[in-house]
Amino acid sequence: MKKNFTLIETIITLFVFTILTGAIVASIILLYKAKSYTYQQSIAISEARRGIEEMIKEIREATTAEDGSFPIETAEDFKIVFYSDIDKDQEIEKVRYFLVSEGGKLGDETKECTSFTKGGSCSLSFSNFIEGILDSAEIKVSVEGDLNSGNETVDIYADGNFLGTLCTGAECGQCAGIYQDLTSFNVTDLAEDNHLEVLASASSKVDPFCDWIEENHSFKLKVELKWEEKGSEEEKASFKKGVINPTGFPPQYLSENEEIYTISENIMNIIRGEPIFSYYDSENNLLSSPIDLEKVSYVGVRLIVNVNPNRPPQDFILQSDVQIRNLKPTP
Image (tube, rainbow, N blue to C red; front, top):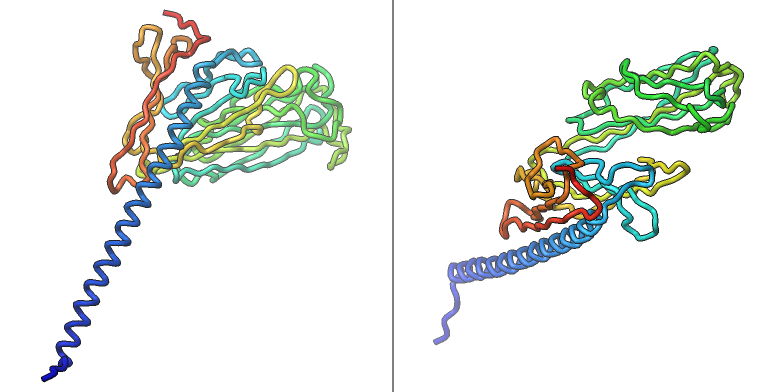
């Protein structure tokens, strides 16, 4: 005698079937995610490894810059700046490897002012531009006006501190109609209070008869403020590379010409509290901060990579060291 399913038996069967189907689907999704994460981690490790290999070669060949600067400009835990012919074009490039937290911010703001009096001055004010914690700041300053002789110059001040003088040589022309003698100044310490006052003061020989945009002005000032904020120490960071080619005569390395590339976006060194770079003298002694650049002979590199630090597999560490061929450290 044929027995039919009761309503209760049918419901139970459907419930069990639904549970089994859900478990199978969840397992497939979990397996896919695990494989996807493993693949992403392997890609991140491969990218970081290629970046380190390239960086090691470039540091090894660090040499005197086209403008005569020492082979190493900056030696810090998470940043190194040096000079090297990285593309074998017989010109020495300025190279910067540095770490930027994902929560960090890059900002810039440009302002102009004009003086209409003989040997006059003008000022610009920047306020409330930092939203987090300042890491670095610089201003790029340029001028236009009656500035074509050695006694027609413009002094630059920031928050009352003298930074330098523009148009001291043949950098500027008389009423040129363009901004000239672009010069960069580091103002990190001055900008930490979230306010920066820039003053330009001309020498007494600068006369008010130029007519570019504004009539009868003695000089015009242009200031571009660029800053970088620190990211949270709880976040991953991106390892980046910046390259500046020398320009002009005498050669200059202008920061606005820097080309920046990303090496890896999954670096854990800040979270783990471990520096990327360490520096050693010729006897393999670890140098302490601030680094005496003339004593640097070896550079150690330790890069910690992890696509997702909250799940396995664990951190992958890439480590290497390099001796700089062209440096002869003093004891």
